[in-house]
Image (cartoon, rainbow, N blue to C red):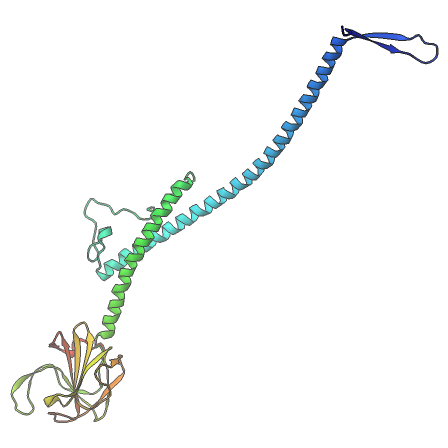
Length: 305
């Protein structure tokens, strides 16, 4: 059988007696197990420390990333608020333009021209329509707001394109309106009823007769396209310009025509010269303005003095 105890002998120097110590095997086993337990605990503590240290480093990185994300979210929130405020201002400006230009927008219930709210009703404010953000907004909520902002921006773009087309059309209309004198001189016969200089009969004069020296330059009163240039009965050399929008101007008794049919002319560009061709009593320009074929008083269109 295995020994249940061990004897430890201690032999000192010189003449001291030998000392004997009896150690139980069970005690040695307990001590060994204790040492193993301490070593195991030490190893476990070391591993735990290393893990905690690694977690601490990771937590520090996560904290830094969290701070960065918070900063980015704050920046995104501020940009959303800025974009929303800009869209609010654009919408209000769009409404004002539509009121001024008498354009309607069914999507926003904008009527033709400026309107007043009915009694007892209030007009909803647009200042917070897209800018009601809080610090508790989640990224998902902000994405939803961004989607709405994107949709509103698209709608505003279409609305402004409508306004752009309107103003472009108005610009074209203004450029096509004969608003200046085609030639400077003396108005010897106005628009309306007059006595015919040859027959003395009362007839309708469809334009203005502007007396000027022979060969004086005639300029286009607005942009347009030459649709006729040639002889026409008692009016002699005649030039007709189509300005669009149903507006045409006619020039008679010309001594010389400087453009031909199909030419594009600009306001102020030379087109002819004053003459005495056709049935005429002296050098002058016969000037007509017709709208949809109906003669109009040219003075209504001339903005110059």
